[in-house]
Image (cartoon, rainbow, N blue to C red; front, side, top):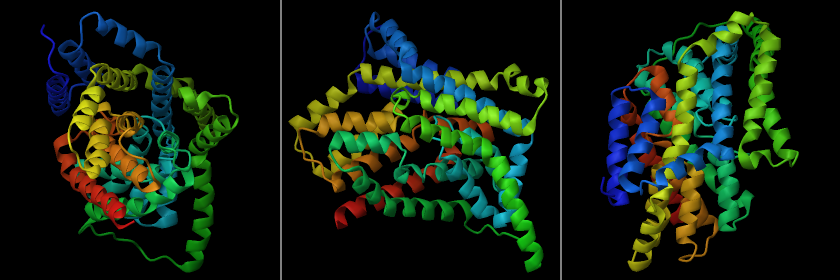
Length: 415
């Protein structure tokens, strides 16, 4: 087979990926098939086994694959033990507003920065948005969008740390710059999710409400403790300086701790513990995690970044284009915000001096580009969970992307 131009090959493979997702082919099969097609179209035959081997032994790949398996197991056990019902019900009674609850839960679980972690919040969002009568594609949008509103200002975000390190901008300055954009993301998400959606509720006596709230708060912390234990474990493991975060094993080990806490809390039978391991879903999604890394590595191996760098250097391109379209395109192509940032900085480092303003715009461009890419695990997993069309979810995601992107651009121009 003749080797195609990397851009043409990328368009062909992503079109193929989109068709498979539209046909609801298993996500693990879809991502790996798209990666292999891209490799066949754009790489020398002898380079393909090398990329597959390198992906398979990469510590970060192994860690994320294991963490995905663990997080899927944890989410399934949450559901089977009905602890997830207790969590959802307690938050619902504390706040007593399905709109706020369904937008808050994905953000809370977003504290657990694992690939495809939207799977954990999906059942919670499903139960809350069902009360509002939302369609499956709107439920999927709520889950995916609100989960990703927290990361641009999350102090433990590895993408923020990488961006600050590569651009030489102080981490606190970069984090603070994201706050207005995050506010815009939350606002647009709330409007699109719940426009003309009514919430009904019963009036409750103040004393009764106070008593119920104390009880529900306790119930919430008990039900949330496995997730909280996982988050705390991630923080402790990262702070210990063992280097686990650099290769992604911090989240995997923390997830194991979360599972142990859940088992101690719910005391399920061995049959319940093993039940998720008997279905295809947990293995299909684990395969999808591997496929996402394989697709990213194949895209990098095609030399896309070098082609783009040569184009930028040889042409007269406006600074805004460099800071927006290049990172957004690379975040989209690689399916990784870290990959989009790293490649963008390597391309642009010799063309401009980074400031908090330029670094923030580059970060948000790469991040938002990553959020909407079809190979984004959270997006793909969420669409699969709610059994809806990716095309219908994009009907809400694209306007949200454009408005949030405009907010980041406006902030850049005004400061």
